Length: 325
Image 1 (cartoon, rainbow, N blue to C red):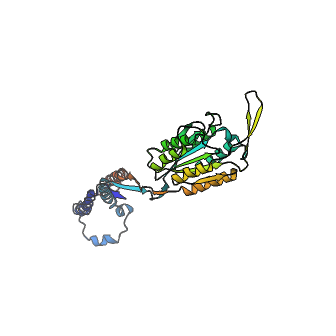
Image 2: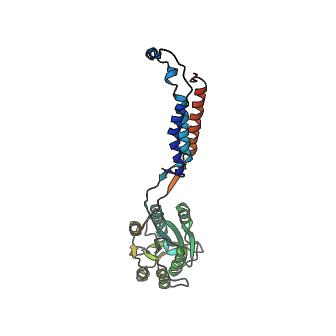
Image 3: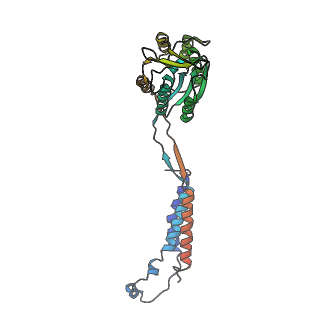
């Protein structure tokens, strides 16, 4: 609690002065010979409450003085901690993500499911997303509206971008999404299942760009040891069954090492989930959240009570508790 104008409390010193003065200025009493005999007579309720009008008026004056001091009560929030991480998720949507070695359907379906769980756990962080194949496109800028981000990830699919694997372009696009971020930690998590074979920017060049901006890159290689079967439809309607190409683990490791991140290999859906759970545990940066106080002004309420007491005292003194000499 605090007082906005504490000097007004000095007016409370006038209350006892007015009480003494009012007593001295009380109307004279009737002189009655042999008044000692009247002391033994029982007092009526009215005579017992004769002091009440004056007490109510003095109480009203005291409350008015406190109301003028503008008392305020506040609800203070405890200083706590929150996470200060901005993360961009880069997702490969090239044709090889059709490979069926990841449950429930293919690599892309498994990746979307794991990414959605990852997003749900990062409730205090700003997240963004980039999808890439031959080029890289932004699915969502950094946002705290994780529902919108999840919807965008659910909608993106293989074929939305011309086929290819532009890992360098994907990293550069993610770096641009983090440009201007003032978060304690800035991170790119890139998932791919292939070899960089498209794009104008080499992956290591993009990694150097991320390093100069203080951005860590975690790379995730998704694919089983034996490769995955891809079923594709030819223009004539017949099916084309292929085996997904391998992963350039050496390059992905170099990209991660150059930025202070790590490379992870996921060979199945459970492994992929474990990878993102580990990244989630690694990227937990606590920052102090400021303490703030919301104040409510109690002065008007006290002024209302003062007015009520004053009116009550004056009304009682002029009616049922009126005294006369």
